[in-house]
Amino acid sequence: MKTRRIPIALIFCAALAAETAPGPSPAEISIRKAQEQIAKQPEHYPYYNALAMAYARRARETSDVSYYDKAEETLQKSFAIAPDNYEGKKVETWLLLGRHDFANARLAAQKLNRQMPDDVTVYGYLVDANAELGNYAEAAKAAQWMLDLRPGNVAGLTRAAYLRELHGDLPGAMELMQMAYDATPFQEFEDRAWLLTQLAHLNWVAGDSKKSESYANGALGLFPEYHYALGVLGQIRMAQGRTEEAVMLFQKRYAAAPHAENLYAVGEALAQAGRSAEAEKVFGEFEKASLAESGMTDNSNHELIAYYTDYAKEPAKALHVAEQEIARRRDVYTVDAYAWALAAAGDYARAQEEMQKALAFGVKDPKVLRHAEAIAAHVGVQRASR
Picture (cartoon, helix red, strand yellow):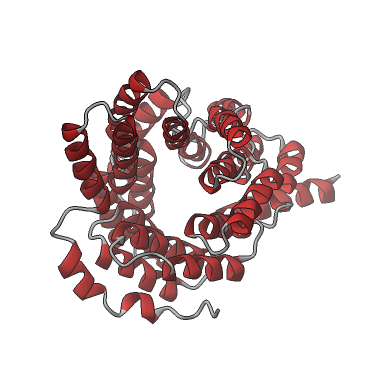
């Protein structure tokens, strides 16, 4: 399958937006259906599992983490009727992933996998947890199991695509994402918007901003004001030097998904646009919010490290945060952040050592490559001077 088949996904965007945007989202439909079922049969625990999962899905649609609280509360009702029921434990594992508690999610998924070795969904959880922890070999094995057990399943394709991206195979990642998009039901417009956003991201990483922009706009046509797509479009505008447009896009994303990491992007865009006073104010708000969640599993530590190194020029603080985060997980992007903090602190030898570990996987993310180039150049100068 050729990955260049872009227009097919975008031709009907205007019509799709008119047909789907005013109505309830897929998650809202699932929430309503589960609530109606519970009202009829309040002692049927699978309905509570379905409602909890629908809340979790709504959290992705809106980036509103309060839906995770609703999901957990609902799940407890399921366990009250049927303690530790298997489907409920699956939802519980999904919630751990949603809260970025990857270590515990991995343990929970391993337990479920031993209980039910042919459950494709559980293998997906193993992929997610292991990938975020930096256990890429384990993640790849789990992804292969997904595709062996059920060839062509969308969840397996998207996870395999992510692993291909991490290993630098961008054309392969795009091909799998396109296959996942083609296999996604028409009515699942949030899923399709998410997949278009991933294709936008992959093309942006590959350096094709025109194609990336087409995909991002396609996602916004399917799901207006979709926060993930706004983020990718903001990155494109930043790379194009259209910083005022980037500011507006990141502000719009932050309004839809008011998280610290999204606020950092607003500050960064303002700084690049030369609006220093506004950027300083936003960065101050970001730092306060980011520090408040820094010790949690779901945090904005990557952005906090970038702020301390690139803007605040406080390398000691950056390294402190980086050391905390690297103790939790060793994925490519955390290793990159740690290396960048080490470089800011003047320890270029260790910075290069860590950066080589990140590059060993083949990642082609522009920011990671810029960091690697800067560290290597400094080490080269040090060697030449010696």
